[in-house]
Image (cartoon, rainbow, N blue to C red; front, side):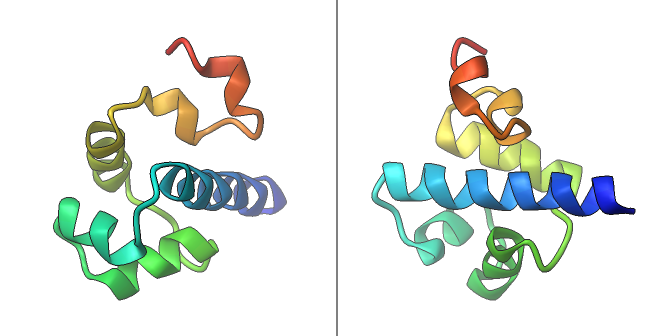
Length: 80
């Protein structure tokens, strides 16, 4: 269970960091992938697990490789 919590924290941190790098609000992202801002906020805080279909939509929305959402050091996978 601890590994799952750490994994969710990595995804949550990456969601926030990518969003801030792109100078977007949580509402912008939520609207862009057709979820509620509250739901997106839960994902970004690590309070809920992000479903795979949402991860895929986020990857498309941000125009990044899926792997960039899964690693704590995103520079390792920036060529994905």
